[in-house]
Length: 460
Image 1 (cartoon, rainbow, N blue to C red):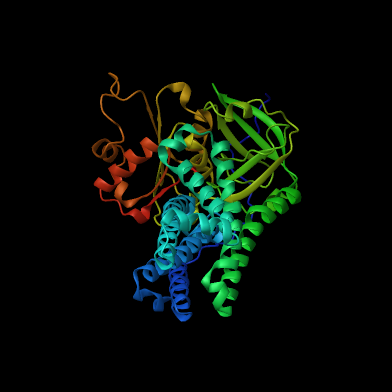
Image 2 (cartoon, rainbow, N blue to C red):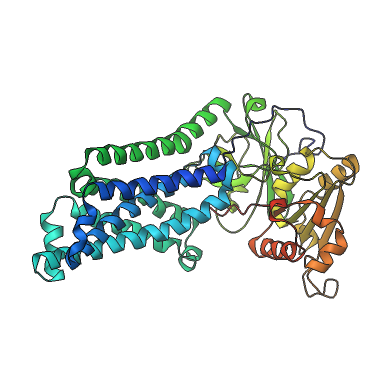
């Protein structure tokens, strides 16, 4: 552990990254249009003609559920491809929520495909459902692969249920989710050789191949190519490790051409530290100081997982990154005055924003909630920034229900007392999930427009 650089002084100007936002309505319109095209192509090669008998109806349902289950699976990959355009349009929070629910929908649709197709074929062949299922698996090409694919999707879906997610380490959960790529590959082979779209309609076949190619290209570009290029270009390395508080350290990262790294204050990277047991682990951490073209800083709290091992990272360790990501930036600002609400280590992205956002004295207000004085990170830096920039800082320290803090200081009335013009401010929030929910509920009760509330949970 060594002394820190002067992190609270004004940053040297670096180029502002270009906006990469799309119109959310346009993205949704494209996805809906593709769904309509898929339905029309199914109708084009005779799907509705099968609806005249119970067996045909079930077979048709099996075809449609397979098509849309596959389509939803591809959308999931696109949403989590880490495309900067999608990230800046919806935020990783929004993408993660959509990804989660599409995942459940995909699982149910594929289960519906298996059941409807098996029963429909059994009715058509005049056999039992069990005999038909065995026949499909043992005699039809690539059906066994499709069954394995469905099992992998089921494993991914089960691991995403909140109760299961809480019991799994992040690495285990992430490893299970990587099997989704194998599931889609196996499903593609089944679709290629057994799907009605591929067997009877060349236009539909080319269309679906195009969807797969586009999806794979996005994943390879943004989840593989861009991280490799960024890491190789900037040659990042840990240059300094500073203890900030009990169980909290800051890592200073230097590299080549950092003034050309397109990152905004408030954003985060997935970091990989090239140690023997750390190179394969990626962890999301915000930069905790505004970009200055000379170094990046992240601040890590020991939360009992692999973050404890990061406390022991040494200077000289090579670093690889994915990103930057995140919408908790000045690009989302809609008002001149800004309120920032931080809880615990959630101060990290807000600390960088306090340094970077242009503002006159009094326009920036920080409310920092912590259970104990030792939980306050960057106290000296925050006080220095407050003096330099005229930032108003409120430290709310204490356990709720204690004699010094009998009520929640972030409830609507106390928050309004603390910041009387809260309705006229942009609000940036970063804190543990329960505190974020409390703040968002208070802001809703105070009728703060949702367009003025900016939050990110780093839960993906």
